[in-house]
Length: 295
Ligand code: NAD
Image (cartoon, rainbow, N blue to C red):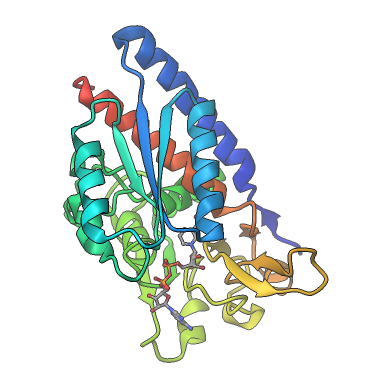
């Protein structure tokens, strides 16, 4: 039977609507307008699209947003200095530095400069540490979006075996920590797979929920999942496609057609986790603005 398609666009729209209501209420009660600063370094085409979408979504939700565009050759010190200025700028409750940064820049140095209280991407070690300790402040946006999608579609991870493919600091590790929490919308048994995992299929077939975040196009095939699994495909991969005008198409980490014949539910790419990531960024920015006035 074909799987239920989990519509990330629809769920993200709901979340964004709720954020817009929260923003309006905060403005009315305190006069505070939530603000988001986005830093984009270089000309990476995909990053430029993400940043444009984030800025647009912020404005639609009533969040003041400014994008700082710096040239590809910008030195690390200059980016660090900009982040310090944004830390001190009261207009902004959230700062997001779009990754990847150019090769001359050490990403950790830049990310660690962001004031943890404005780290709405949740990637500062203070916020990752709070998550690991079971007392999260800002949860990284993509993992938070994955959890939100599961819960809102009735696929609560509680008590389930969640298998995560990928151990990056942005997706794999934080989504594992998040779903491991003894908390509502979590409380799962989590297994994390990575490039060192032997016999990946043996483990992925055990997952009641499978989260694919390896950045490998369509590498999760139908024989690697169990009947009735819920599949969350985080991957966004560009693969060459001469039939498309732009010469490529976007695909996830999951072989969507065959896997959706076996799964109970599945997220598509595009239109799955991607829009949720932006929605959660807005949610974190609102949360940060509320905290700035003691909320
Ligand atoms: P990454 O390259 O930093 O990490 C990939 C991880 O996958 C690594 O930890 C690696 O050990 C693991 N891995 C790689 N090949 C594997 C294999 N064959 N078997 C098991 N594990 C394997 O990538 P990332 O930043 O975590 O992103 C992962 C994917 O998610 C990418 O396609 C990226 O574009 C996408 N992404 C999407 C969003 C979104 O909003 N939807 C956000 C962030 C990243």
